[in-house]
Image 1: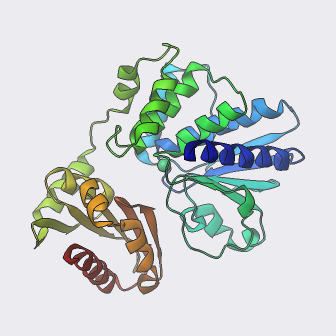
Image 2: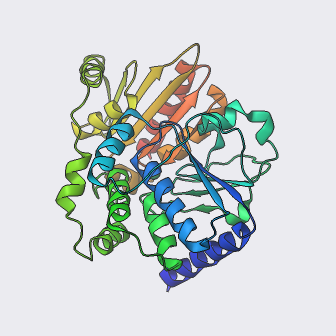
Length: 349
Ligand SMILES: [Mn+2]
């Protein structure tokens, strides 16, 4: 029953979005910085879905994204396998912003560099989000909230785009289903952080037997770069451990690859990990991961914790209950202290 309600709610918003976009001639689709494969897949497939939904040659869709290193590598391999698909991505701040901006795979405008770069222009610019992260509490003047699809119950934005495509009765070619599966696999940690629906959607994407899951997984395999390997090893050397009621909290720091190290620490036995990385000037980034068991049993929510310390660091945090990050610009030490205090308090309960 609940599921049907959810489905129809999604449907309603999707039809509202389509009605709203009907008379818009230039639509900008963008995503967070260091766009990952889920972000890339969502952008490319959503453009395809909208193009077919409108069948209007005068309508222009612009994709804007700055890809992470690993998404660039992935895109290269993807284009070799599917040369028939043309993907054009803008990476410079767009000169013309279009009539509306649709932001995919984040619901925090601070995570979009060009928005920061064009701060003044965007203040009154209409935009809305399609995303699967925990909603950020933020005052956003020009956000068209009635079109927001912020759905943390989805493991990936790729899956939301897949559902939108189904609602609009758009049939996707093999290549784009392949791409959505890649986004779904990456963001669900190969189903590790997924739920029943994640697996059901993956099964549907594989239904027509034109895709082998082995091929999708193989394309996602990536030998870590030398700098990543060194960062992991150095980060492990600097590891500090805290023990609380049998739970292990691992704390470390690296120059880059903080998210990878945070994931690695949980893989090798930490129940919670916190890895920070100092960036230029006072700026820093904190990445955190936790075992799912801990989030379920204790209601630990890293996204909420990082949002709650955003003020101290004059930054913004968010993500998921078991995987979250924070970009800060001051008081690194105090921020880390405050985070650890909150975690210890939860574990004490
Ligand atoms: Mn994502």
